[in-house]
Image (cartoon, rainbow over all chains, first blue to last red; front, top):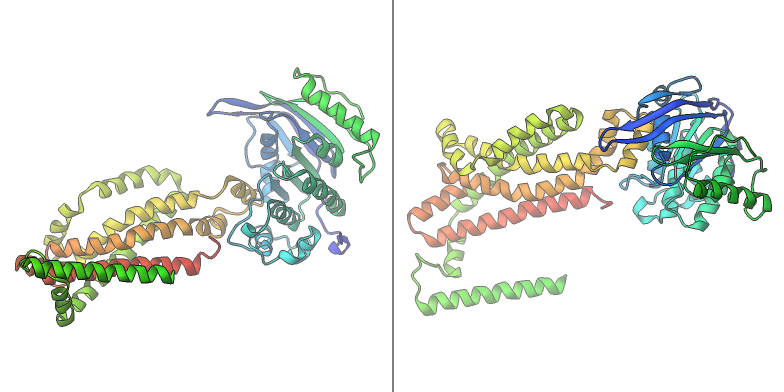
Length: 269
Length: 244
């Protein structure tokens, strides 16, 4: 992965803090998140895991400034999410590739750079970005002609295209098969290491979270609260077969499935 | 494809043959059902039919362009300013529910026997499908695509031109496929209510004179024109909407 030529002019990654964040929706009336307090260090990767309905995606939308908090406050590098979005510092990737079918892979990536021009940041060309995700030969392919995994790679390249200091990833690999998921996870970590943005990575896949994250936040459902959080000190790249890795996976699984009652925040690792 | 064309051609020839033989053998009077040969003769000899077809086509296309444009502009307005939706839709439904056949004579009284009422009637008939489909089309953008664009701080006008408009193109063409043949009908109905020229006028005159070969010939020309206009829309779609 040749990220060396990107220069070092990327904006510095922000820290994030959620202060008693509550989000209620009116129709249907649901409290998606309640009193969520979180701190994320600049340049860290935080995996947010939880069952469906635990408010994972809501948390991400709030951080991206796509929705407003009902109560509480979110600060990203000291700024409100809305402001961060307006200053074009957000890289967003969802479970759906969300590519425009009438644009080629390269043109889709180009559009991100059109929406989000950053005179101060050296941008890789769509061709180079596709090379990074192993799709150098598919620049002119239209998305419907690509497999689901390939589309998601294009989507990943598009997320990288704006060199945002904040990545918000909403279950980006959820629709992919195990093999593709593993190989893409490796690539993402390699690409993350280039600019070291701050990352919130929402997933329901424990192995993926342990593989990628510095810290795992477990949300408990209805309403979504921080059930537990713990840091992962393993060296990257992480070997899924190692005993230490497996132990953390088992622990995360026990917390996720074991006790639905809210547990106090534990600092372990 | 080729085989299909041959089958279609043979079917039409057989049908016309049976029709011709039946009219001739049963001695059916021409003012009831004319033989295909008589219709053919009228088509070949009557130069007025072609000129009338040109008039009707022009009226229909002018009305279609105006109606479709109004529908499109209203849909864009609704997309950008959601609060105008109720007002626009109430008005649109009112126009849509008013029987055109009742409005056409009024327009003729107001605007005379020229192009005016035909173009207006056609526009009134065609704006609704374009309006409805365009609104649907502009809204058809996938939620995850919209989120992605917003996360990059794309402006509403950027989202419209780069995402909503291209997404709506298939919907717009679906509307035009309905609206284009409808435009021909609108023009002919308006002509029927009073016109100095056009296919509707020709039909009305032929009807008044019980000149069945001319009436059938006019209907045939109208049918072919409607089919042609439809084909034109399909052809344009094929050339512009490549990915679908």
